[in-house]
Image 1 (cartoon, rainbow, N blue to C red):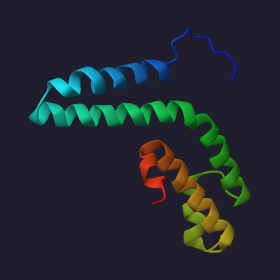
Image 2 (image 1 turned 180 degrees about the horizontal axis):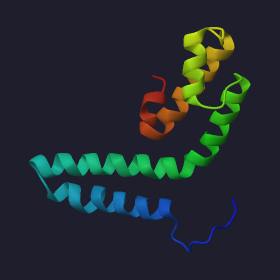
Image 3 (image 1 turned 90 degrees about the horizontal axis):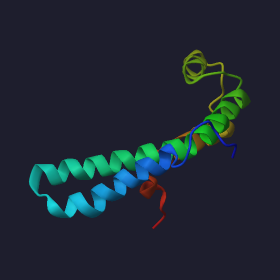
Image 4 (image 1 turned 60 degrees about the vertical axis):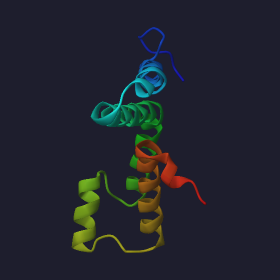
Length: 115
């Protein structure tokens, strides 16, 4: 990973520190509505942290998947599907599954755990 213009801690590390503070110090000390909103904030910060860390590679992989299907954007993919320019075949299904997997890796990786 290349060193950017910013010093440490990184944005992901700052987000993780705030998330840890909310989880360790705030959550045990609050109840009711504030406890619920603290849990929501913890989940949101986890998503932001994962997007910061995974997002750049995921964006490259998504662009490659779209290019493999002969389109440059999600909107172009949707239009091509509506117009019947892309076959509903194994390649499309795999690309869509990989796209959903990438979204879940950020939004809620717990859904990817096989039981």
